[in-house]
View 1: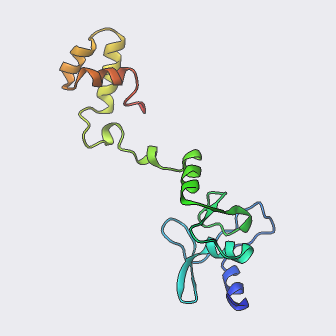
View 2: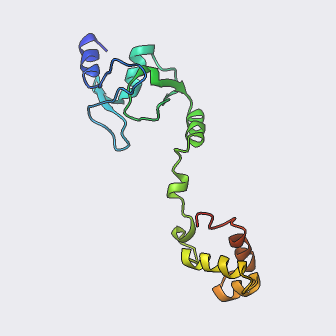
View 3: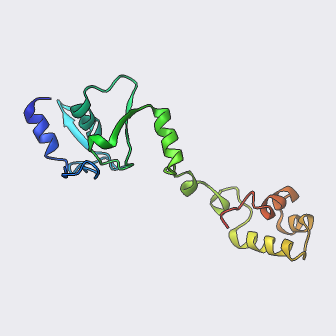
Length: 159
């Protein structure tokens, strides 16, 4: 990038006086919030350009990870080299995976035979010793192991 391109790039970044704060991309963004910039007739991710301007070329096979978990951040102090695997592990550790949020648990599972209200009722009936697991399974049209998993909170844990 020439000096004019560098100046144009940084003009689209909300650079603060602090290296601790995020420097958000204020230009065009992709749907997930990543900055989208055109450099030499090619579209690139803004945080990758910010990293390259501060640190040099990104080695082949490496990605740029956000330490701050803010996809629009272009602060070089918040960016580091990583691999897809290390970024995935970081995502899991920090709970950014969305698996729980989007997971087909409970009644959101298309194969669910029960609903939240029924599960609460099953647990109450079992706890109060009104019905045993086999009777509950028969009553609700599921297997005894399914009832066992429900009462032990191995399944339907979100309720």
